[in-house]
Image 1 (cartoon, protein in one colour):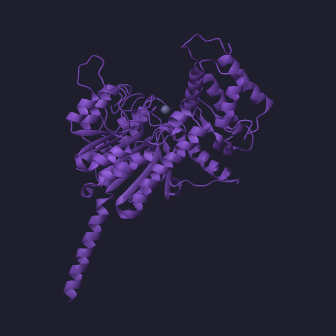
Image 2 (tube, protein in one colour):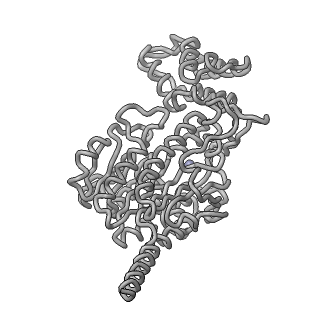
Image 3 (cartoon, helix red, strand yellow):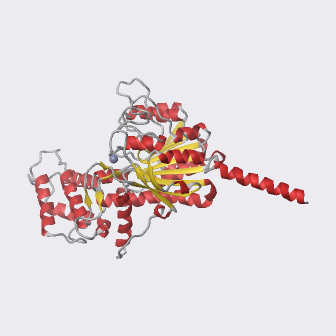
Length: 466
Ligand SMILES: [Zn+2]
């Protein structure tokens, strides 16, 4: 009897030791493009402010038990771009700005953790709210001297053999000189099925081995719609994450590695567009919640790591006084880009230059100015002068078929919105500030303290034994 108990205990120990050794079987890697520490803090102040209270309300991922600070510089600059940062986060190697998946010599490919995982038989999913061949997703499978070589990066996507891709469609599907059959044919030849929209994904997923999920209606700016502008039927990052989990779990034995990018936080911050940035952050959190639900069902085998590639916009949580007024951002109903398109469409429909009264009404409805948000005389005057600068020639001055570019009007609306929210932007580009890392699950305790961005994939690799 005693012998049997000893044997049983030894077996049990072996099983425990083996499972501890295995590391996480399911790995989620979320990258908020442009998501600096202030982007995170700002949205948390916003959430509390709209309830009329001071302080902050946490997001899902900021409640994860482990957190640290990440240094983001590239091989040739303190201020990285998304290709160099993506390469660092994918492979653990620093490279020069604009270089994708190669060392600074622009020749030597680096091996990414997605590629390592895949080689080991782990299923791989890459998703984004930008295009699938954009810098951050591209960093996990692409190897090109410049991030803008979208056509070649699209070809490398097909060669990767990863089971799942999701996001906005190929940016340059056809080669300039027709020297190859194009990204769609390349993907098809490599065994991929392209589906458009979440519904088509659900119809076809079961009967495919490899899949690429694109938006149903491709957008002119080569990305999924901003959360603030999303219409019914538009694909969201949360849906891409749901689909990716569903697809990965077709063969759960193999485990998975999944990278999901909140790619448009960066776009909104480049545009210094405050309400759009807030909604992108909340949307990123929604996608992470999908992974967190999965984690709750597979706690011991799952690791979720959230980080960013760099900060964008030099976002400041003050405009020069000891306060912010972030709650006003709830009244912004459209991104700057969408507002521009909206005014241009109105102009085309009316067939004339818009009057100030018409523009004023649109500003009221889409930014809450004068109606929900009190403006100073100076702010009203600056909006009016942007109107004059934009539409100066007045109604009746356009030739038939002509219409007006109205970016300036939207720029000014976002600038006033930033001012009344009492925040500030230092730049229209990236900055060299810290970005956060948060983690939960198997091995999450590794992600604390100050670390270089190159350390994150190496920690994942070690934990998951890629
Ligand atoms: Zn950027």
